[in-house]
Image (spheres, rainbow, N blue to C red):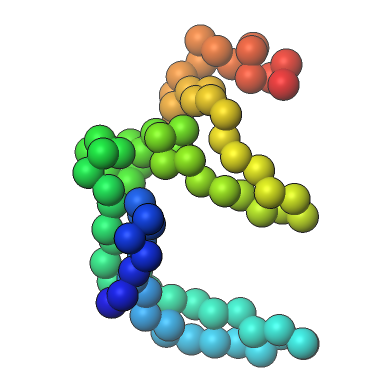
Length: 84
């Protein structure tokens, strides 16, 4: 499977089903392989520090993650997060 050298997180997927929904198509797939850059230092896919991954997120505009707010189960910073 060819990948971009700069890709730090890569999913190799197999399309299992495609469904026509009006003027678009929805694809369902099975993940066959995951390649994660060793510099991300994660034990598994639930331990990833997204600030190190530096993802670009598109939701009508492009966004980036500026800081780590906490992990699942961390409640000490909950009040700070709610102020955002």
